[in-house]
Image 1: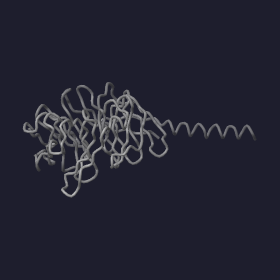
Image 2: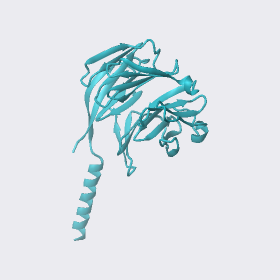
Image 3: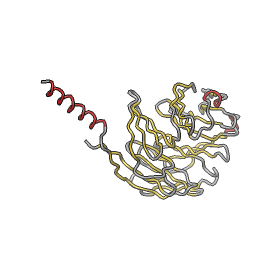
Image 4: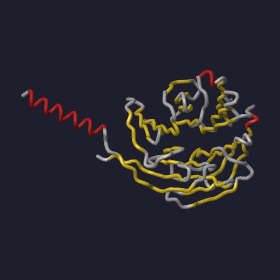
Length: 272
């Protein structure tokens, strides 16, 4: 009886191990050429945005070019981020402004000049889930701003962010699920709430990309994607489908990987 019980326990353990170590594979969904100085983004509908010098190109989910628009008046762009499927915000660190484009890449509304908010050294901008609000990071002065473009709301500011976080350098910021993630390549990831208060610190080095949904945190580290369950902290690592990845994004079910010459789109499938 003890032998049979041991066999059953061993079998159940093997099944549990096999399930936790599910084999994964990637299915390629498209690719785009990109130069080292170009910037890019993607939205939830699978549209991909890529700059070429002073022109922004928009490609649909199957890779067809839909719109191209010159943005000489804005200057060299530092970032572009979808606010929603109908609106895009572009940021120029050179001119210290951010401007808005519609879904055809046509400018509308007035650009926001950061000098009007007493900001002169902004390096990073992130879209907030709060209506008409944007995070702006001034690394030189170590200040984080949550700007409100609505007249009834006031802007928020966190001073001496470097001292608060014990951070050396913030390489990128992104807000997801009402949490702001700031990534330091040496110290790790700092998580702030919508009021700019520190709520968590994740000690990881060399994080090149980050995405969070309601269940998981996805981190790009050394050509691997670490998938961390936000409820259990269980972690699963997946080898990326390409090497020498510079940037990573996830939008819906699509993963985007940028190398020195390409953006490649993939879906990640788990084999049963």
